[in-house]
Length: 297
Image (cartoon, helix red, strand yellow):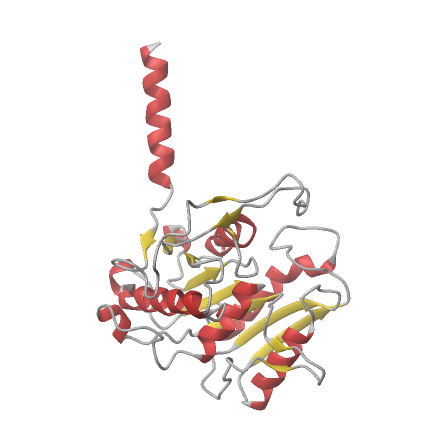
């Protein structure tokens, strides 16, 4: 009995050690936070739908943002890194569908992954992207500042986001010149400009109104906006206009960009394979990363 119980304890300890430890983004209370909004938990309800026959972890609320580094296998590590921002309407975070599962895929390509758990839901009186953008700027600065010590290439650090996380990726890609919070340490003194960006079924990029869709005012696309990859379906519930207006702005600023549109595909599928052709997007993204030199050609 003792041998069995000891074996179980050793196995559990090994599994716990295998899971990377989350790294707090802030040394103390995040900027502007007054009090914790409650314990973090999976808010999924029995009535919530499945994706490709499987459930989704809908994490919230988040008051203590973190970053978890998932390293690529040593024998295939390219040194490139991607920060991943799950979606969830700035209300929750789809932590497995658009988080850990994405990191597994990136690791299989030899790319290191930093999964960012940013603050949700929307704070009263603030733009929905306000605190998340602070977390995103802070996270990218930390990765670049610590790149040498972590064995990462500081010139191949990109970002990938889904849905609301796609908007956050766009916000970081167009708002990196100035931090939106007072500097905390030396990590806030290095550039938080991503080297490349991937926006997967992005939301909130297009303003809504009686006129033709236009780029959301907080997204200031310039010639210094990083190269971008976008994908979306025409029947996406958040509107394919999000990809169209952002791609048009990138083109106008002469930013290298690649966009893929599909007639059907919906929203919120992550990497989970279905019979819809749009779920083959990871192959297109991999080819794009190789074309940039992020991955070996």
